Amino acid sequence: MLYQDTGYKVSDAMTRKPVAVSPEINLNECSKIMDKEHVGALIIKEKDSVLGIITEQDIVRKVVAKGVNPLEERVSGFMEKNVLTIAPEEDIFQALLKMKYENIRHLPVVSRNKMVGLLTLKDILKIQPQLFSLLLERFELKEEQSKPIRNPSSDEGICNTCGEYTQKLHEVEGSLVCEKCKEEN
Image (cartoon, rainbow, N blue to C red; front, side):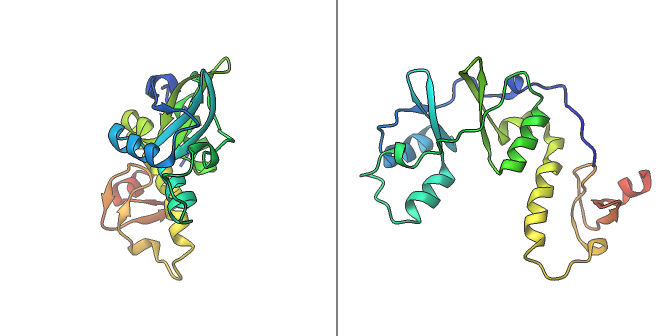
């Protein structure tokens, strides 16, 4: 499926005041803040400088799974310091591609070396839900590697063209599509 820019800029979808914390805060407090604010990531800042980002996945994989005591460790030791960013004037499709290929769900938005917001997958999908099929491709490909045999013509799932659920998908030019989209091609 060929996508083009959506006409929506990153600045149209981003959260303008993302939740930020100090690098000195402990990991347990980070988890409590994420829970209270209903967010999946925290920006780690000192004054106006972004030092890093920590996500729910980071806490699970780097802390809980490793048996680290979150009461004793500061976020600065576990945050992602190599933070990928995007400019506010970029199209949200470009942001989604960056997220897809870098396997991330949160992108700080930076203008003139200053963070002006945070863009998440949820932010994008709220204003462009049809882009969900692009994300779905990544998950389908990941799943395919663990399945020994697959018959695309008999599978149920989401049509790669219209995004609708169907009980029977058909493979057309490398994409899985519903009967209606197959006939339109």
